[in-house]
Image (tube, rainbow, N blue to C red; front, side, top):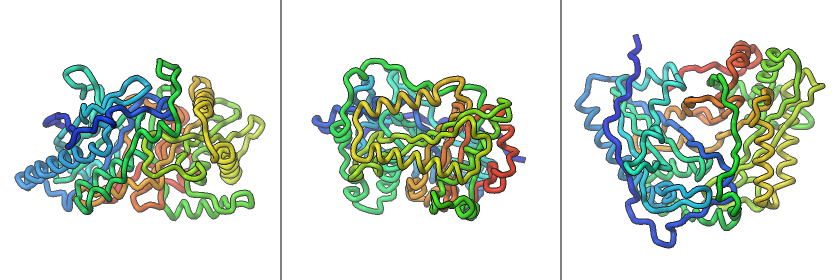
Length: 449
């Protein structure tokens, strides 16, 4: 019988950069992309199983925990000298004070083997494995932009949980930070090669902040209802079969993200239509990494938030949709987005995109509009801190689920996809029994170590 997971916090401390941030870098201005980004925190978990599930060698495990904790803290301190804004403090919607305030580091012990977590993944339970940015405030009441929790399991396994302000990072920047930290921890190369030169201020020079956004502004209010989140895994072979099935003259070579997204869109629309009793127009908002859209592409060391989104739509008169036609709509939306913004995007353009997104998904009556973000192709699974690459990357379910959000990420071996769907309970009940979806995806399978 499985043991009920209990997480015991052993200590909390602040990790500061190993070298003081130079005076000329003490203020990092936000770009307009950062300004319009919601003031939320992004959570992430990386699981590293031990070579065995032996829970009896307690002395060895405790010695290993102490060694790894020191390594994580030391390497994090060094990494923060490169990613210095993460150790700073937020000055409302204008800049980051890079004052070496530090990052929160929590060490915790977990009373069960890591195989129990991976064998029966529970996204809600995983919230205990990431640090709470409200609880981890300093004595002065100020919060952290970056929080880390090192979870040591009784078998010797490790899970690294992060909670980081979205105001200063997107998925690209988060992945760059994690892999830089891991490479420094591993000590596999000179750090000059591990971390490319980082100049956070360069973003604001390319996409200057707008002065009127320095004061409080209405933000996108994602609808929070009685929603639940479910995890689906699409194996590479199933995705290949789906791509072959939906290829058309309009889109002869659909991507794996396109076919998985289109299938999910079809299934959630059908569930919504069944519960509403009629067909309604639907919109699929897909977040896009702007670094690859721009011509020429943006610099690889440009960190912060640089994302836009395109929209694919269906009309009310269209009752039946197949995956092939939805893929075509997505490709059309993406190509139009590139035409509009490949050669440049202004602050006013960014504001307009934000406004349109709010109108599509920020209202209570938008039951048939969806927002999707894809972390596919970002190399999170390369993060080796010295005890191998992670067996699983997970995003815990939030304390309050946001309606109609779909998140995609790579499956461990690269060509599969994990999808997380947050929907109203009555819609999720129908999606869970959708046979077309289950023909290509498994509902919350075990993680193979």
